[in-house]
Image 1 (tube, rainbow, N blue to C red):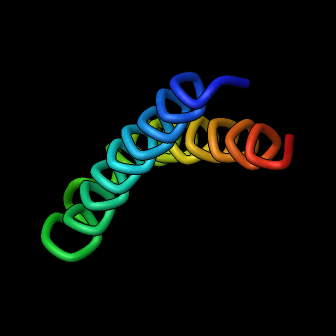
Image 2: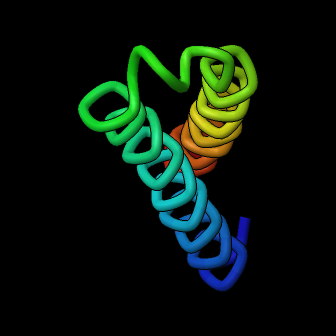
Image 3: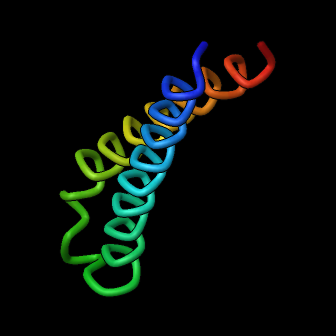
Length: 69
């Protein structure tokens, strides 16, 4: 993997982490400010947060594998 490809992958990981962190922040806000009234929002928000974290984990694993080469 070229240095440019590695840098692009690092950028992808950082972006995925930022997105996951934003979803986690929304979950935190729900718990701290809007529960129990907004309980119906939990499933969709939890799924979106999970998906964002899974995307970060996948990108991070690809970066780790590329860094070992």
